[in-house]
Image (tube, rainbow, N blue to C red):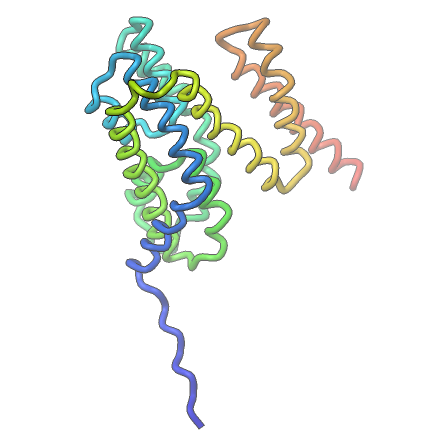
Length: 244
């Protein structure tokens, strides 16, 4: 009687390619469509092709790039623009805090985690949090490296191509495409929320955002986030107290 050969664990190259494959998905295409809009915005703002592609790879998070372009157009000084970009990227800190423990293995060097944190943005974070639980822990950094690097490099290419042909694209189309990523992010967070408090936070943010924008422009996102998050936390504590 023949015995089945023991399964051979997949190597790092295989897991890297699986991460590359994961990037080729509906969320990845939605992200690419948003970068089509960014390329049009970058060209209209007077950036060169090299500047737009470099900004895509180095800044990466789309809202931070929009903030930077806004600072450039308004004549903001370099330190002020850098501070604005940094503040807009603070929102990614909770994502990094949630993702790093999922990526870290028993022998993962810190520099690897620091490097991979550059890839953390809406799409890569959602895809990773959905799929990492099914990946061996020691291969998670390799998998995420494939996922994140593919998203970055592919969208750098998208920006380069669209930048060249942006003159033939209606500005309204570019603006509409920029909205696809936040819409995808909202629906993904709603579906993946593990507790009702997550839904409460999103509803409060959607309701309070326009109100604070009209009453307190410039601080609307901060105020809506603090009030929405605080309200959701209070709801969570009250629910646990009632259940206990």
